[in-house]
Image 1 (cartoon, rainbow over the protein chains, first blue to last red):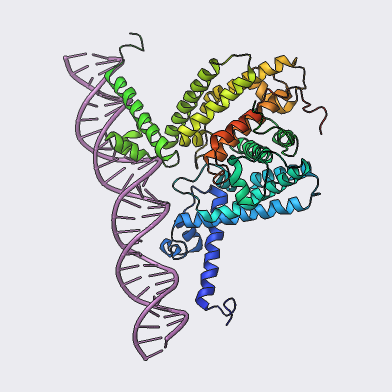
Image 2: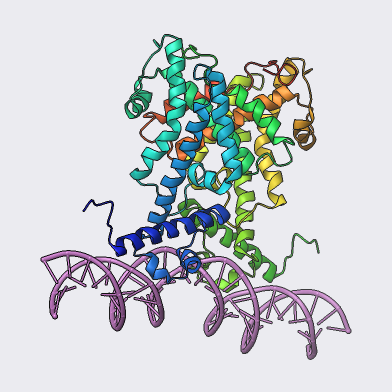
Amino acid sequence: MTPSAALSARAVARRELTGAIVASARRQLAEIGPAALSVRAVARDLGMASSAVYRYFPSRDDLLTELLVIIYGELADRLEQADAAVDRSDLGERWLTLGRTLRCWALAAPHEYAFLYGSPVPGYSAPDATVAPSGRVTAILLDIMAESDRRSSGTGARSEIYAGIREGSGIDLSDDACIRGLRAWGGLLGAISLELFGHLHRAVLDYDAHFELIVARLDPSAGAGQDALSTGR
Amino acid sequence: MTPSAALSARAVARRELTGAIVASARRQLAEIGPAALSVRAVARDLGMASSAVYRYFPSRDDLLTELLVIIYGELADRLEQADAAVDRSDLGERWLTLGRTLRCWALAAPHEYAFLYGSPVPGYSAPDATVAPSGRVTAILLDIMAESDRRSSGTGARSEIYAGIREGSGIDLSDDACIRGLRAWGGLLGAISLELFGHLHRAVLDYDAHFELIVARLDPSAGAGQDALSTGR
DNA sequence: TCTCAAACGAGAGCACCGCTCTCGACTTCA
DNA sequence: TGAAGTCGAGAGCGGTGCTCTCGTTTGAGA
């Protein structure tokens, strides 16, 4: 009766097999990266014909999209959980936790980090379905910036440049908070990318110590209230 | 007689064909990206059998390496030229020029930027031959940081963390200068990557204005002399 | 000048890829 | 009970990197 219970045997099988395909694809992605993910290899792994996989995902790109959504979701879960364990008024510590947790995750799953934040997979462009899950990740940073704004009375300029952030998040962030947040976010992803993609090879000898120094200096809640647009240089 | 002159006809032909292969591969890379670069397509483009290309480059990866070296070189040329046109004592302006020139180049050749600074091409790891050309790019930043160090008497701590930078560049940079330089460099690449890889989509509405605000705030020559390791938090 | 090894281009072939189509078997629903 | 829909398997298309062979061409040494 209820649509959730009493599913037909076929529907149950379909759900299970869909899950198995995703699980196998996730394993492949973690091992060899998104660009090398192969539908045929997934089929081999599950002992079925490659054409059968297309009954469940119309194309490789749809499979990638599914993985993108899942991984964004897991990352967001992890970051939210870490953030929740920190004193919500200690913005500096919340930032450090965000940065450290993101890096820790990236080091443990470099291919997944590259999938989310590295160069796009050739021939694949993320559809709109991935906007929402990726937004959960940045929402944590936005929350920190909103609190930072509140403390500095939040009366800074609000130019058209960052209207999309305000509209997308529903938070009336000042330009200054947007800039500080984006600078920190870009700096964080840049630092992780430099390390993960080998650009610090033979230059930085202690990655952990280096990251601690960098992430501390990227704190977006520090230096609030600086001029944003009004004064220029 | 001299080995440079009086090359045999075969050697001349080999040089020309090698150049033609590289040129064709560059065109492909600019259009469809490094991961999709195909030896067979290069061969088709030049009207030869695909197997013949392997007489000149033993594998697709060697062709990619050649392109990597060339592109690093061209980028370094461009950045050096831009830097040379700026008052060498104006470190802030030199940084802005570096950042703007890099972004301008990246926007004009996004696939090449992704090749150099995005996630690694699957199955391809850059060999040591690419270390030197990539070093020319960062040398410009190091030069700015060295001058910055000189101004603040350069007496800061020099920990083991950044010994590789000092050894690799031959410049006795302080930790503080290393950190400021790497934070700025990571922030710059992070900002460009965010923009280029679509992570600012629908959030930032004016990319040019946003970048100007970010790059100005990343200036590594500002805030010199901050505590690096000695004081901690 | 002649010889012979090295270099070369072309083509076939191997194993892989994403994806499509067909066909027979099965399940579901009216 | 039929009809319609779903499924898995297999063949096939055009693409990929790469290897091997084969006949030709080239160039350097005897």
